[in-house]
Image: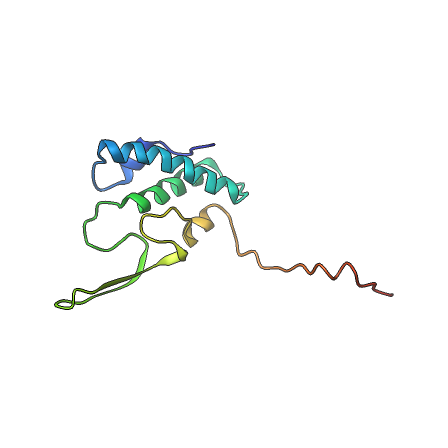
Length: 128
């Protein structure tokens, strides 16, 4: 299990200080982020992996901006007396979850992989 960043790296990028519980969780999340990055099969450099790891963990912990909007939200709505609040999170992730965003995929040199494979194509004989 490779962790590409340290808790100090994450703390340096946050707008608030992490408490002891968050520091312990941060270390575990960094290991999880490393596994997720390695699973992509990327050949990105170590600096890119460090940045992506930090961004993933900060998104999961919350950056401390305290503006009421979850990190990664692309749309939101609020109501008043009906007590309604709704957010749309980008890249299929959710607040508090580790995921790799579109921008981070570019940093890791992961392009759009579009293709297909048909298992029956091997059964068809092509004549020349």
